[in-house]
Image (tube, one colour):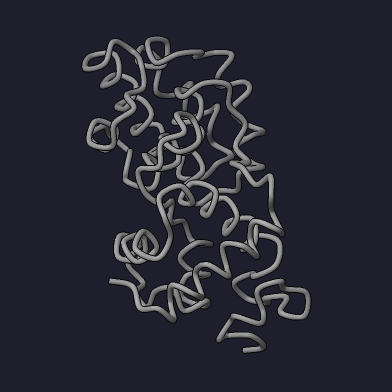
Length: 213
């Protein structure tokens, strides 16, 4: 159960973030759920900008799950190498694509359990796809930025992404979950950086217990 003080804080932060980033959305380039799923898998330990440089050639060569399921491992590795951890990501992509073909007729399912049952797909990735591609508020995406800001803003004391997500889901109503994650991510990238947060130009500074720290 959320405490009144935390509820008030969450309400203020939601309003401040909405005012600062009214049009915030996923910065990965995609045109369908399959492309977003692939791009999100590639974004692990990699910037969205770098992923967006790699995916046009990848999608041109493998435009759907069926094509990717039959791909040559070495070819995929070469195409995604700039995103880092390319061998493990290739295994995830090929396993995911084959599972989509075998279990879902090549289509990306719009259910959390079905998505997280796919190789290489955890809850964070599933939340990205469900929220951004399908408009379904299944939870809150917790990446490194969201995790950092949740702790700095006093929204969660945990370092565990699942626990942080659970805390955010209690504090914010479901209709805010998708946009909240997009806005926290943008704020983390543009203002509240890990090493040098720009507290002097932060619109959340009045409500941030870590202001100036």
